[in-house]
Image (spheres, rainbow, N blue to C red):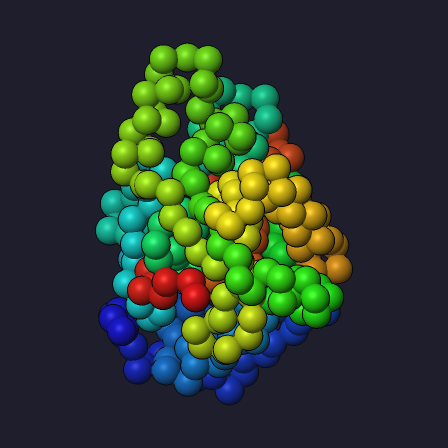
Length: 295
Protein backbone atom coordinates (compact mmCIF):
# COMPACT_ATOMS: atom_id res chain seq x y z
CA UNK A 1 0.00 0.00 0.00
CA UNK A 2 1.29 3.43 -0.93
CA UNK A 3 1.41 5.32 2.33
CA UNK A 4 1.74 8.80 0.86
CA UNK A 5 3.90 11.52 2.36
CA UNK A 6 4.11 11.92 6.10
CA UNK A 7 2.70 8.54 7.10
CA UNK A 8 3.76 7.67 10.60
CA UNK A 9 4.07 11.25 11.81
CA UNK A 10 1.43 13.78 12.82
CA UNK A 11 -1.65 14.11 14.95
CA UNK A 12 -2.20 11.35 17.55
CA UNK A 13 -5.50 9.46 17.48
CA UNK A 14 -6.36 9.87 21.18
CA UNK A 15 -8.99 12.58 20.65
CA UNK A 16 -10.72 10.90 17.71
CA UNK A 17 -14.46 10.32 18.16
CA UNK A 18 -16.93 8.27 16.08
CA UNK A 19 -20.68 9.04 16.05
CA UNK A 20 -23.12 6.98 13.93
CA UNK A 21 -25.23 8.95 11.46
CA UNK A 22 -28.14 6.49 11.31
CA UNK A 23 -28.92 2.97 12.41
CA UNK A 24 -28.28 1.76 8.86
CA UNK A 25 -24.88 3.18 7.95
CA UNK A 26 -22.62 6.19 8.12
CA UNK A 27 -20.66 7.91 10.87
CA UNK A 28 -19.12 11.29 11.66
CA UNK A 29 -15.56 11.33 12.95
CA UNK A 30 -14.34 14.25 15.04
CA UNK A 31 -11.10 15.26 16.71
CA UNK A 32 -8.86 14.56 13.71
CA UNK A 33 -6.78 16.60 11.24
CA UNK A 34 -6.37 14.55 8.06
CA UNK A 35 -3.40 16.66 6.97
CA UNK A 36 -1.50 15.51 10.10
CA UNK A 37 -2.82 11.97 10.46
CA UNK A 38 -0.65 9.31 12.13
CA UNK A 39 -0.84 5.53 11.71
CA UNK A 40 -3.08 4.98 14.74
CA UNK A 41 -5.51 7.65 13.55
CA UNK A 42 -5.71 6.13 10.10
CA UNK A 43 -6.27 2.66 11.61
CA UNK A 44 -9.30 3.98 13.53
CA UNK A 45 -10.67 5.72 10.43
CA UNK A 46 -10.22 2.54 8.41
CA UNK A 47 -12.00 0.50 11.10
CA UNK A 48 -14.91 2.98 11.06
CA UNK A 49 -14.94 2.80 7.25
CA UNK A 50 -15.41 -0.97 7.39
CA UNK A 51 -18.00 -0.82 10.17
CA UNK A 52 -20.11 2.10 8.92
CA UNK A 53 -19.37 2.10 5.14
CA UNK A 54 -19.67 5.92 4.95
CA UNK A 55 -17.37 8.25 6.91
CA UNK A 56 -17.87 12.02 7.23
CA UNK A 57 -15.19 14.32 8.66
CA UNK A 58 -15.96 18.03 8.89
CA UNK A 59 -13.73 21.11 9.30
CA UNK A 60 -10.71 19.93 7.32
CA UNK A 61 -8.21 22.13 5.48
CA UNK A 62 -6.75 20.11 2.60
CA UNK A 63 -5.05 21.01 -0.64
CA UNK A 64 -5.01 18.68 -3.63
CA UNK A 65 -1.77 16.99 -2.55
CA UNK A 66 -3.06 16.32 0.98
CA UNK A 67 -6.31 14.85 -0.37
CA UNK A 68 -4.37 12.57 -2.72
CA UNK A 69 -2.07 11.50 0.10
CA UNK A 70 -5.04 10.58 2.30
CA UNK A 71 -6.58 8.58 -0.53
CA UNK A 72 -3.33 6.70 -1.18
CA UNK A 73 -3.34 5.40 2.37
CA UNK A 74 -6.12 3.06 1.19
CA UNK A 75 -4.14 2.03 -1.90
CA UNK A 76 -3.67 3.27 -5.44
CA UNK A 77 -5.76 6.08 -6.89
CA UNK A 78 -7.52 5.29 -10.14
CA UNK A 79 -8.69 7.04 -13.26
CA UNK A 80 -12.20 8.45 -13.50
CA UNK A 81 -13.30 7.63 -17.06
CA UNK A 82 -16.18 10.12 -17.22
CA UNK A 83 -14.93 13.08 -15.17
CA UNK A 84 -13.38 15.63 -17.55
CA UNK A 85 -11.91 18.08 -15.04
CA UNK A 86 -8.56 16.73 -13.86
CA UNK A 87 -6.89 18.74 -11.12
CA UNK A 88 -3.21 19.62 -11.19
CA UNK A 89 -2.42 16.75 -8.79
CA UNK A 90 -2.43 13.27 -10.30
CA UNK A 91 -5.47 11.23 -9.28
CA UNK A 92 -7.50 14.27 -8.18
CA UNK A 93 -10.57 15.42 -10.11
CA UNK A 94 -12.66 18.56 -9.81
CA UNK A 95 -16.44 18.44 -9.57
CA UNK A 96 -18.01 21.76 -10.52
CA UNK A 97 -21.77 21.75 -10.29
CA UNK A 98 -23.48 24.83 -11.61
CA UNK A 99 -26.88 24.20 -10.12
CA UNK A 100 -30.29 23.86 -11.69
CA UNK A 101 -30.49 27.11 -13.65
CA UNK A 102 -27.08 27.46 -15.26
CA UNK A 103 -25.54 25.93 -18.37
CA UNK A 104 -22.21 24.71 -17.00
CA UNK A 105 -21.14 21.21 -16.00
CA UNK A 106 -23.62 19.90 -13.44
CA UNK A 107 -24.32 16.72 -11.54
CA UNK A 108 -27.96 16.43 -12.54
CA UNK A 109 -29.65 13.10 -13.19
CA UNK A 110 -26.85 10.92 -11.82
CA UNK A 111 -29.24 8.91 -9.68
CA UNK A 112 -28.42 5.78 -7.68
CA UNK A 113 -25.30 3.92 -8.77
CA UNK A 114 -22.11 2.11 -7.73
CA UNK A 115 -18.93 3.60 -9.13
CA UNK A 116 -17.44 1.61 -12.01
CA UNK A 117 -19.48 -1.58 -11.49
CA UNK A 118 -19.45 -1.89 -15.30
CA UNK A 119 -15.76 -2.81 -14.98
CA UNK A 120 -14.37 -6.22 -13.90
CA UNK A 121 -12.93 -4.68 -10.72
CA UNK A 122 -15.03 -1.71 -9.52
CA UNK A 123 -13.61 1.02 -7.30
CA UNK A 124 -12.91 0.29 -3.65
CA UNK A 125 -14.40 3.66 -2.78
CA UNK A 126 -14.06 7.39 -3.22
CA UNK A 127 -13.19 10.48 -1.19
CA UNK A 128 -14.93 13.83 -1.72
CA UNK A 129 -13.65 17.11 -0.30
CA UNK A 130 -15.98 20.11 -0.21
CA UNK A 131 -14.08 23.22 -1.33
CA UNK A 132 -16.97 25.65 -1.77
CA UNK A 133 -20.51 24.36 -1.49
CA UNK A 134 -23.96 26.00 -1.28
CA UNK A 135 -25.50 26.70 2.11
CA UNK A 136 -28.21 24.16 1.29
CA UNK A 137 -28.60 21.37 -1.24
CA UNK A 138 -26.11 19.10 -2.97
CA UNK A 139 -26.34 16.32 -0.37
CA UNK A 140 -25.46 12.71 -1.15
CA UNK A 141 -27.68 9.76 -0.24
CA UNK A 142 -26.19 6.35 0.52
CA UNK A 143 -27.88 2.94 0.84
CA UNK A 144 -26.44 -0.12 2.59
CA UNK A 145 -26.47 -3.15 0.26
CA UNK A 146 -25.42 -5.49 3.08
CA UNK A 147 -28.51 -4.62 5.10
CA UNK A 148 -30.57 -4.85 1.91
CA UNK A 149 -29.38 -8.44 1.48
CA UNK A 150 -30.06 -9.22 5.15
CA UNK A 151 -33.60 -7.85 4.74
CA UNK A 152 -34.53 -10.33 2.01
CA UNK A 153 -36.39 -13.53 2.88
CA UNK A 154 -34.34 -16.72 3.08
CA UNK A 155 -35.97 -18.18 -0.07
CA UNK A 156 -35.17 -15.01 -2.04
CA UNK A 157 -31.56 -15.02 -0.78
CA UNK A 158 -31.26 -18.62 -1.94
CA UNK A 159 -32.80 -17.85 -5.33
CA UNK A 160 -30.46 -14.90 -5.95
CA UNK A 161 -27.33 -16.83 -4.98
CA UNK A 162 -27.18 -18.56 -8.35
CA UNK A 163 -27.86 -15.50 -10.53
CA UNK A 164 -25.59 -13.08 -12.36
CA UNK A 165 -26.17 -9.38 -13.02
CA UNK A 166 -25.12 -7.74 -16.27
CA UNK A 167 -23.54 -4.32 -15.72
CA UNK A 168 -23.67 -2.12 -18.78
CA UNK A 169 -22.08 1.30 -19.26
CA UNK A 170 -24.75 2.15 -21.84
CA UNK A 171 -27.63 1.47 -19.42
CA UNK A 172 -26.72 4.52 -17.36
CA UNK A 173 -25.55 6.57 -20.34
CA UNK A 174 -28.97 6.36 -21.96
CA UNK A 175 -31.22 6.41 -18.91
CA UNK A 176 -29.47 9.28 -17.11
CA UNK A 177 -30.08 11.67 -19.99
CA UNK A 178 -26.41 12.62 -20.22
CA UNK A 179 -26.08 11.21 -23.74
CA UNK A 180 -28.96 11.90 -26.06
CA UNK A 181 -29.61 9.07 -28.49
CA UNK A 182 -31.39 11.58 -30.73
CA UNK A 183 -28.12 13.29 -31.73
CA UNK A 184 -25.16 12.01 -33.72
CA UNK A 185 -22.73 13.31 -31.11
CA UNK A 186 -24.57 11.44 -28.35
CA UNK A 187 -24.58 8.22 -30.32
CA UNK A 188 -20.85 8.56 -31.02
CA UNK A 189 -20.07 9.05 -27.32
CA UNK A 190 -22.11 5.98 -26.44
CA UNK A 191 -20.34 3.97 -29.13
CA UNK A 192 -16.96 5.03 -27.73
CA UNK A 193 -18.07 4.07 -24.21
CA UNK A 194 -19.15 0.62 -25.41
CA UNK A 195 -15.84 0.07 -27.22
CA UNK A 196 -13.93 0.94 -24.06
CA UNK A 197 -16.18 -0.89 -21.58
CA UNK A 198 -17.85 -4.13 -22.74
CA UNK A 199 -20.67 -5.54 -20.64
CA UNK A 200 -19.46 -7.09 -17.39
CA UNK A 201 -21.12 -9.84 -15.33
CA UNK A 202 -21.07 -9.92 -11.51
CA UNK A 203 -22.94 -12.24 -9.12
CA UNK A 204 -26.10 -10.74 -7.65
CA UNK A 205 -24.86 -11.80 -4.21
CA UNK A 206 -21.22 -11.14 -3.32
CA UNK A 207 -19.05 -11.34 -0.21
CA UNK A 208 -17.27 -8.26 1.11
CA UNK A 209 -13.54 -9.03 0.78
CA UNK A 210 -12.62 -7.52 4.17
CA UNK A 211 -15.62 -8.06 6.44
CA UNK A 212 -17.01 -11.28 4.96
CA UNK A 213 -20.57 -9.89 4.93
CA UNK A 214 -22.96 -10.73 2.10
CA UNK A 215 -23.88 -7.93 -0.33
CA UNK A 216 -26.81 -7.51 -2.69
CA UNK A 217 -24.62 -6.48 -5.59
CA UNK A 218 -26.89 -4.47 -7.87
CA UNK A 219 -27.33 -0.80 -8.63
CA UNK A 220 -29.90 1.19 -10.51
CA UNK A 221 -27.32 2.96 -12.67
CA UNK A 222 -25.48 0.08 -14.29
CA UNK A 223 -27.23 -3.25 -13.63
CA UNK A 224 -29.30 -3.78 -16.77
CA UNK A 225 -30.25 -7.47 -16.87
CA UNK A 226 -29.93 -10.86 -15.18
CA UNK A 227 -28.02 -13.34 -17.29
CA UNK A 228 -29.97 -16.46 -16.41
CA UNK A 229 -33.47 -14.97 -16.76
CA UNK A 230 -35.70 -13.90 -19.62
CA UNK A 231 -35.28 -10.12 -20.16
CA UNK A 232 -38.79 -9.38 -18.92
CA UNK A 233 -38.23 -11.49 -15.80
CA UNK A 234 -34.86 -9.85 -15.18
CA UNK A 235 -36.27 -6.32 -15.46
CA UNK A 236 -39.08 -7.16 -13.05
CA UNK A 237 -36.72 -8.74 -10.52
CA UNK A 238 -34.23 -5.85 -10.70
CA UNK A 239 -37.04 -3.33 -10.25
CA UNK A 240 -38.23 -5.18 -7.13
CA UNK A 241 -34.71 -5.52 -5.72
CA UNK A 242 -33.91 -1.84 -6.22
CA UNK A 243 -37.21 -0.81 -4.66
CA UNK A 244 -36.35 -3.01 -1.69
CA UNK A 245 -32.71 -1.95 -1.43
CA UNK A 246 -33.37 1.79 -1.65
CA UNK A 247 -35.89 1.99 1.18
CA UNK A 248 -35.18 4.84 3.62
CA UNK A 249 -34.53 2.32 6.41
CA UNK A 250 -31.30 1.34 4.63
CA UNK A 251 -30.15 4.92 3.91
CA UNK A 252 -28.24 7.85 5.30
CA UNK A 253 -27.85 11.40 4.00
CA UNK A 254 -24.58 13.36 4.04
CA UNK A 255 -24.80 17.16 4.23
CA UNK A 256 -21.65 19.01 3.24
CA UNK A 257 -20.17 22.26 4.38
CA UNK A 258 -16.90 23.83 3.30
CA UNK A 259 -14.11 21.60 4.57
CA UNK A 260 -16.17 18.37 4.75
CA UNK A 261 -14.55 15.09 3.70
CA UNK A 262 -16.81 12.17 2.77
CA UNK A 263 -15.42 8.68 2.23
CA UNK A 264 -17.49 5.64 1.23
CA UNK A 265 -17.07 1.92 0.63
CA UNK A 266 -18.15 1.49 -2.98
CA UNK A 267 -18.21 -2.29 -2.64
CA UNK A 268 -21.29 -2.33 -0.43
CA UNK A 269 -23.25 0.92 -0.92
CA UNK A 270 -25.21 2.59 -3.66
CA UNK A 271 -25.10 6.37 -3.67
CA UNK A 272 -27.06 9.19 -5.29
CA UNK A 273 -26.01 12.86 -5.45
CA UNK A 274 -28.72 15.52 -5.31
CA UNK A 275 -28.60 18.48 -7.70
CA UNK A 276 -31.12 20.55 -5.75
CA UNK A 277 -28.95 23.66 -5.55
CA UNK A 278 -28.86 26.86 -7.58
CA UNK A 279 -25.43 28.32 -6.77
CA UNK A 280 -22.01 26.96 -7.81
CA UNK A 281 -20.63 23.90 -6.03
CA UNK A 282 -16.93 23.00 -6.10
CA UNK A 283 -15.57 19.70 -4.77
CA UNK A 284 -12.44 17.61 -5.20
CA UNK A 285 -12.60 13.85 -5.65
CA UNK A 286 -10.27 10.86 -5.66
CA UNK A 287 -11.26 7.30 -6.59
CA UNK A 288 -9.71 4.42 -4.66
CA UNK A 289 -8.53 1.48 -6.74
CA UNK A 290 -9.34 -2.14 -5.89
CA UNK A 291 -8.20 -5.42 -7.41
CA UNK A 292 -11.34 -7.07 -6.00
CA UNK A 293 -13.52 -8.82 -8.56
CA UNK A 294 -17.01 -9.16 -7.04
CA UNK A 295 -17.61 -12.76 -6.02
